[in-house]
Length: 238
Image (cartoon, rainbow, N blue to C red):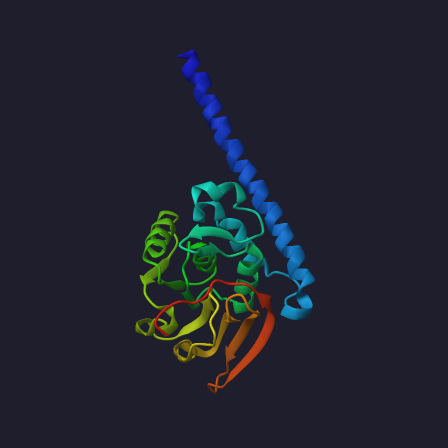
C-alpha cells in the first residue's frame, strides 16, 4: 500500500511538473511573439499585440494540435509538420493574422484551411462562431475531433475553401491559411460590409505577401500588403 501511495504521489508530481513546464514554455513563446510584433510594426501597423489576442494565444494548448513526435517543439515560434505536406502555422503569424482581423465577441468568422485546428481554436476564443473548411480529409477529421474534445465552438467541413461557405451567409471576418495566386472572388462576396480578410497571396517557392482586405460599407474593397510570408498552397479545383 505504501509503495502504491508513493507511486501515485510521483505520478501526480510528474503531471504537475509537465503542466508547469508547458505553461512556462507557452509564456516564453508569447514574450517572443510580442517582441517580433513590435519589430514588424512599421510593416503591419500593429506595434502591440491586442491583449485579447494574447490571452487567446495563452489559453489554447498548441501541444494538443501537433503530432506526438512534435510535442516537444509545440511552443517554439516556428511552423511544424502535421502530415500530408501541411504545417501548423508559426505562432507569430497566427497572432498577427488574428490581430489584424480585430475580432469582436459577436463576430462570425470563416477560416479557409483548418489544418490541425489550432488557428480555429484561437479564433473561437475571440468570436461568437467559427466556420472552418479543410480539403484534406484526414486533417479535417482529426481537427474536428481535437476541437470538440477541447470544447471549442467550431463548425468544420470537408471541402474546397476557394468557394467559401455561402450556406452560412456572410461573415464579419475571413482568414485564409494557405497561399492563393489571387484573392478568391467568392470570399469577397461572402465578406460583410465593414468586414476584414487576411490572406497570403503569391506562389509557392516565390514571394508571398500577407494581404489585408477590408470591405467598406458601400461594398468597395481596399487592400493592403502587410509583409512577406511563406505558406503552403491553397489547393482545390480552381
